[in-house]
Length: 377
Image (cartoon, rainbow, N blue to C red; front, top):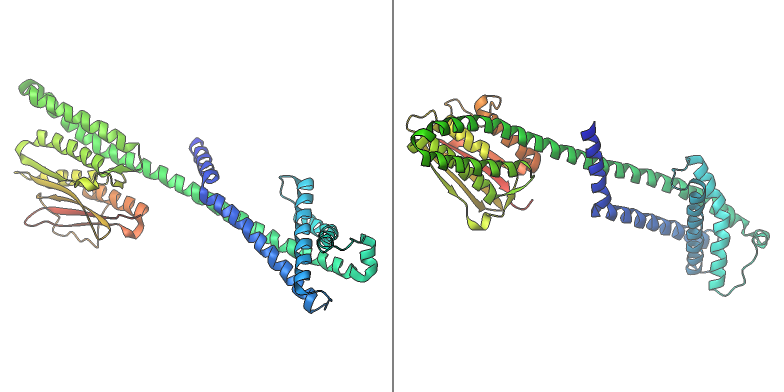
């Protein structure tokens, strides 16, 4: 319950401070003004063509805009006086729209007369001069406008609610991805730590210098691993440093049975990507490819950009893929593929179909794990 409250609070803060949300609010206000202008223009056309007044369309349009905007302001003022920040009742709001029409008509009409230098008549004289039909018409137009803008407001509320739900879903998804990353780390580290500490205990007595080197690499690995588990994005430099410490630890433990090569161009060091995408692939290559092999083998980790995509490869010379392995029919539930399944799920969640992860046979022996991530995303 507490976590959900944090998510809601976090997502709510993000919405309030989100420039896109502010832009959407301004856009909705501008759209309302546009519809109000269209309404007033239609009324001016109706008065000019159907009622055939002696005034030009421009004069009728000016009066229509002044009256329409005045009615809109009166409605806004009455709504604030009656309901303040509360949501008005629909029927009561429509009554307010009709009641505001005569007041807005009188205010806007008098302003128009003052603009054109004509003495403003009283409201009773307006009714006596046969303009009462215009007042009544303005009431129905105001009612129609009230219904229209009420529906627009409901649509805007639904859109805003969808934005909030989207923000909440994104926050929950980020937390889920973070939990998944920490779970993955928890799956990797115990096995590695147990073997490393067991080897460290044996080396202390027979080779203190080698034991000291292993302890330094272990500290380096744990520090880099801790930083990775706390961030949503990391640099390729940091990811390769983590892999370097991990592989150095294993090379001390496995001795001549393991050799490795890590290639990272300097221009890609600051490239951002999700943490620990390569770690499970390297661990799989060691655990299922090189460790079971009597004479061990070699691992090469590389990164390069081609055709707007970042290509990450983990190439080993281990035992290779099972003879019945089919890239189109993957059995990810198998223990040898848990790390691969995790990588695929994270790539799908973060990049959709734009990212690609494949396993293929290396020549003459081993596996090539290939990650393809879009650069501009």
